[in-house]
Image (tube, rainbow, N blue to C red):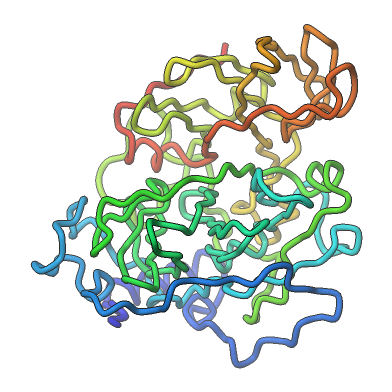
Length: 403
């Protein structure tokens, strides 16, 4: 397996280390030998499994443009080294969890990833994902990969089943449009995270099934899931969880890291957006406008969607310490139709109220009070990300008018 450890990659690591104030070696080495032993209060909820590893096939990780592989879906020259070698940013393959009621190391407004599956629910703190980017997990028997790309601020979860294969994913060390490129350990095909498809290798063209996931505050998630589980810091690697190795990266006036080409000029490249519709009907909602408005109703792919934002969630990419990041807002996107009735919402503090019944809903789309208490809105696939990234993958995106 090739490390693709080029001069460009080495320079990139040094730059990342300089941006985050971390030694370059901390961005490259898995440091597993110095990992601490699991704490007594962390547990394995479900074993993670995959198909037998390393099929006897040609590896796109070794050579993306191998003529004996299917033609890549993207220009091979656009897939570049981000610095670390494969799994130099170590994915979490044996996740351990702690009961939410026992967690005292998260701050109220910092972000956690909340997949819309599993009972009890699970939260994946960004303070951990920012250092690992991929968690191979199993939730209620469903094999999933929970992923986060700091350079695009993109959190996505996928079903790890693809045909007869049960995949496990690693970090390739490569970037496409500055976005995480994953690889599966079974065939070493390359997958674009934002697209969720194999762009090179024997699985070229195969698309992963999305699992809806939101980024919300720890306080919002714990309030809704007091009996839930939280990904533990017992990861098998030694990292300073709670620090941000990309300090200042998401400055509104900043520049994307290792992004080739010209960003779409309709908005500044580091503008945060709520993105929906994918290639069928791509839409971008400027996050700051949505936070001001609270709620936006729009049509995506010909069906109604309600998108909302609650104040409070802090950027994990702003300050050295995550808990000091500037507020940016937590979002959600849902089908507003419940029992055949299309609901309309207004924001009320951290929650939302539907005008038809007066029921109160939390940011996760759960009715917590009123006639519809206990009901849940059906989540709609969406993505919190930077404008440059979404526009690069979807150049024909329309920008929603929130006013």
